[in-house]
Image (cartoon, rainbow, N blue to C red):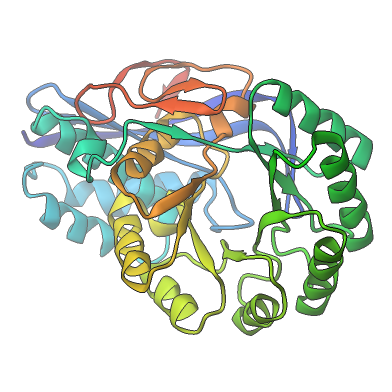
Length: 362
């Protein structure tokens, strides 16, 4: 099985309602799709999310990186030389984690097809069903309460609440949501770098004193502020999760060794795909640290790859893979099967896609 063609295209999917965080507001998903075809007729798919405020990657730079720097080094290479392909991919250019992630997914898809086995089984085969939380965008407290109640009515047991724009109003948001959904529902808080370290300690302690029982707080401070992240971690009881501060395996080692956070959040768009995400899993497992597996705004292409990783590895104990549930349409046939908070991995080779519509290839 040799690589014969690498194509890039665009996919656009409207959201059910605007997705709002402390960093951005999105109304329509606009991502890059990678399609790798082999001489045997097998096809592997991957996806790169456009998230300039986090990864720095935009539509043009992603396409350019894949077409000019990555794909020429892959053509006519054999899929069973997988380690060699990964070495080539990750050394083709620095940074550019989103285009690397898209190609990485497609190669893993082909690797599973080469051996006629679902990818999650190649990655460890720990489970074929997983459960995700649902994200509640940052809005006025009344709207967030309404969204939270609707999510609970659909069966979600874990809510991920976006905050970080105004700590006083953030406190009101979480109080109102906890009062509305009760204490059988887990609440995760994601500040998306929106607080200073002192603000974070103050507001988290207030939430603790009010008995709001947060499962964790994600990325309370700026990504580069590792000292601030450590200050928060050491001065609150609530577990702290590093997200934007942790892109690479080296980042994970530094954060864990310095006890700057209690957990790390893996996202394929940050790591450059499954290959480096596995390294972070092994690092965290070695140190006895839990991992969350999260996502950007991705379609079911990227989320299927992430779901297979979650299915393979036990150390991934928390899941934030809800993006397909935020979209108004699903043009992807096959792949992970979403039933609101329940995600099932079908017993099909690779990532298990049948057909992907609405992609316009260059």
